[in-house]
Length: 116
Image (cartoon, rainbow, N blue to C red; front, side):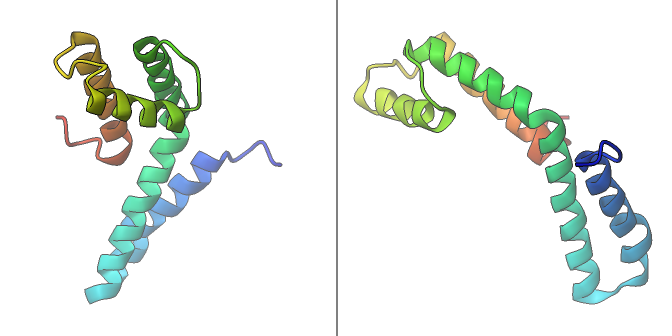
């Protein structure tokens, strides 16, 4: 695998080309789809940049909340079961803090302007 450019740099280059060059020369549905593609590449770029740290933080918080280990998917499913069964109080401050942080992290990747 090549060291330069990175995957993120490659994705950003294609996204920037779509936004600044290609979209300006397109019209109608094709221009719309170019904007959608550029947006999708922006999400991929932010996932490459922020995703690992976001997942690690979420996993760490889930382990603390549930007092057990597992994959991110397993622990999220376990959290849902614990909330549904009442084993974790929906009003617990640590649950609220976890959900708020997880939501902010996911929005930073998917819709970074949303929380501004």
